[in-house]
Image 1: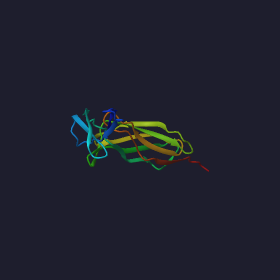
Image 2 (image 1 turned 90 degrees about the vertical axis):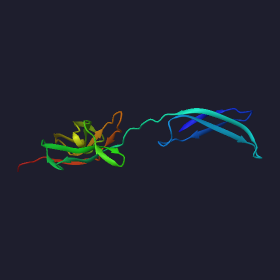
Image 3 (image 1 turned 90 degrees about the horizontal axis):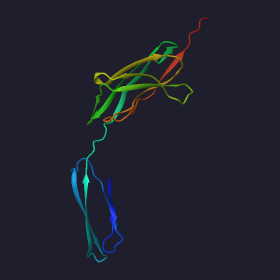
Image 4 (image 1 turned 180 degrees about the vertical axis):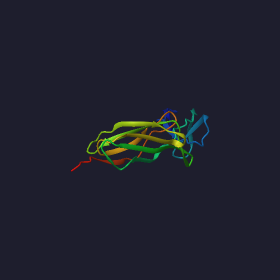
Length: 168
């Protein structure tokens, strides 16, 4: 939204107006004209101002789909594998995004802190794959930090139960 400063016109207190624009409005120089009327409907003042509209492309929406930490139950010291897909909105469709870094974070059961554990660059189709060792039960999530053309996004969390194996 663009707001122009109030102007004094022939002893009137002044006026202020705002104009909303969207993608369908033309970029370039515009002229706004304001007309003041008295109580009887007679025109008592006119003023105009020029301003410019420049369209700035916003970043594309992103999402991480099909994020999984597997297996869901694993023995301490064994490998946990992370898979998912980074996608960007293209109109009404979601397309995979190639060659972007996705980081994996871990929050131990009972903790409130997320810690970095692994990362991968997305391949063709936006797919990523990473792994780490299992030490304690907790939640994992994938995070894309965004860049100059893509918004940041965070996946859903996936919980992994880690157990120790005891011989009796």
